[in-house]
Length: 633
Image (cartoon, rainbow, N blue to C red; front, top):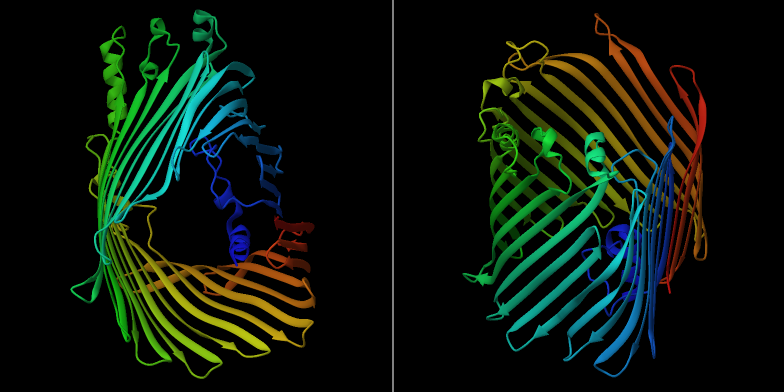
């Protein structure tokens, strides 16, 4: 069962879950649940090709070996090919001296290559370290390390030493509290550059009673990176350099307290959360040509402060359950200029004014209410209400982005089970969004957006057939406050009908018939809200169908079918008749394969070939493919 869950996680989100060996994560302290797996994924969509391959191998007997590799490659075929490759490889071996100490070696190689002309389009980091793992007591690990490193960036190579330590306390507990902590410090001394990573996190949970607990979390991180960039001609001549150096140091502080109180007043579950977050981003340029000073010479800092408070109250019974959540948050961002004493004060004031113009504050308040009312075992009414208000302010008199935003959303859905095989639903939902710019310079953007949506459908599930059908109509109206006064601003309407059908029919144990398709009919128009009339100017018709035959051969499944996609757009003439404007038609065969060996191996290949026609008669053909292989061993 454990392997099955891990395999499912791999299938759904391999890159998100396992692409975690980064500069700010623990590298030498491994989880006891680490599994050995191989994952490959290749996709071709239109002119984009992407490949992602991940290998993680763990061996732990009398000695331990860990191999990790993550390779990503993206190719975009345009007038000029864009190719970006990222490759991370690490190998680690360790031997236990006794039950408290182990020693080991680790080597890392990280490569980035991008053929675009961007600031950092190539870099290589290679290091080898010796480490000693110490576990003085159970669930507490300390690992100091030291070694050599080579760091190459935009063609310039630097060598040096790397040293630091990692620490971890995993679920350290006593009678009524539990603690988790981890610590990392990594110092890369590769003169003239110097990179430092410092991370610390602490989670402390106290269980006062079976129903009351408090959880305090604190995090600190600082990441300092020095990187090269091409120096301008004057700086290059004066300092006799080709590349200048800039340091970027980001420091983050987070403190959060979470109080849980179950069976509050005997009927509610309550949760209260308070969060403090502060971030500081500091930039320093190594070589500055003060003799040719201008306002761009000054380095800058960004300070960001966030305060958030959140509370929720949940109620559950046999017939009714609901959850009320209230969130209040304040954010303050300041952009500062770092002075240089020997540079003209007027230049400093000029840059300070430019940076301070980016300062902003925001206050956000949200209220959400969700719930389910059970009329019977087969009838249920669900509802949700959401209200959000944002007040965004800029202290600078030269910044006119000050605005208020109000967002309201509501949804009501009724679900009924008519018999053991058929379930039907009907729903209505609405959205109201109002944006108001405070100053007249941007008030032409003031608008109200209203959306209303009606949907219904049902699902039929029997022994040999299953079908899911959805019907939906929606109307979207955007009304500008001052469209009568400002030229080029007009209110718009967008109306749409949508139908989706997903059906499968099992003929026998080896053959299934599958169908998936949808129809969209959309209309765009100019809107006169006061008269509630529209003048349509564009109409869209979109059709997609994909019928397939599924052939099951033990663990192997073959899918053979056809794919049809059509998108036509029409213009409205003066007499309100439609005239074809653009046409896109794609059709062709589909072939898919899936192979699964329960908890260890999964293979999926999706391919389709398209014959494409368009209104300009430039017909073409193209192939698309998606290959995924996951192997847990």
